[in-house]
Image 1: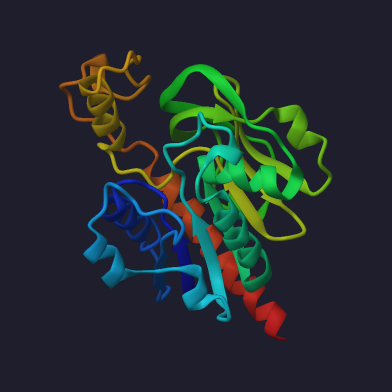
Image 2: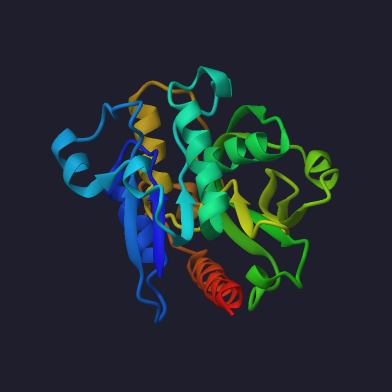
Length: 266
């Protein structure tokens, strides 16, 4: 299975590892193509590493892929039009809709995709949501919910999101996971087999900890991640309580993609 990944995160290698680990708990043979933007050079990545390990959309634009993943980026407080590479990004996600069987958008990636395809505006929260939040399954019959039941715990790390009313008002969209505290989490496009997740099934156990200590070091006024550190002590090692749910989710996505791609070939 061929999956193209547009990695917009500053720490490219860490994000690569998160995704490959999360999608690796199964029997599928996955070939990854990591993409970077041509119109913006990452300030946090070694240009030689990107040149050796990443492609741009022009390199693969005529190729067919099973799946596409678009990560988030640390630009969620900016207007979409202010992002330097926004035109290239919208070209890439349009290519993904046309040339892949399923797309998965994460965090700010979900915001920009919903805005581009459906005109759904993002909302900025007064403070950053950070921690492990409980989510309800809104559509238990959806393919990606197979094997998931009860309360779903997912890492949340963001300033932005969308209104549930805006999702409910769009006939093509279906809300799959929702938190009473942090709002919509996972949304699907029924017509295009696309999924938009504002949160992070792919995170390692210590990812929120690294982000929290980084933000504190950078002088940001931020609350400690909720429901995360044992005994609410940031010196304690967190537990990956979302691991099983994350594995089920990603395996469901891969299986759905595999079945969908075979049905299109028939």
